Length: 84
Image (cartoon, rainbow, N blue to C red; front, side):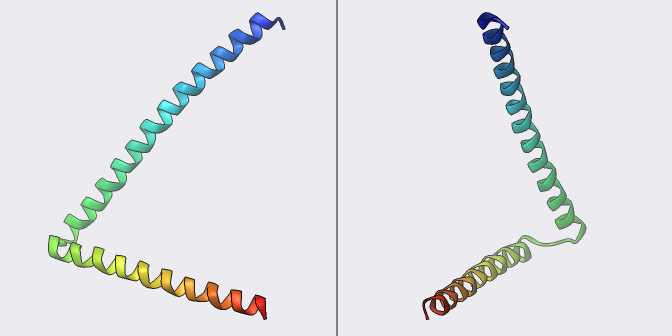
């Protein structure tokens, strides 16, 4: 292949990559919208009030913090065992 032909192929490939990146971004946005729609349907189907939803979110945040603290304690215990 000549240098010019290689350059031409490279440019074509870069253009295709940009198109694929744009398509991937669009698909990710569509996936996110579909996930949000599923969540909304679940909330509506189960007649979850905004107050209940806020409690669920708060519980989730507290549970996540608790799990993170537990993991941190386990890591500290593991580090102590390794140094002994």
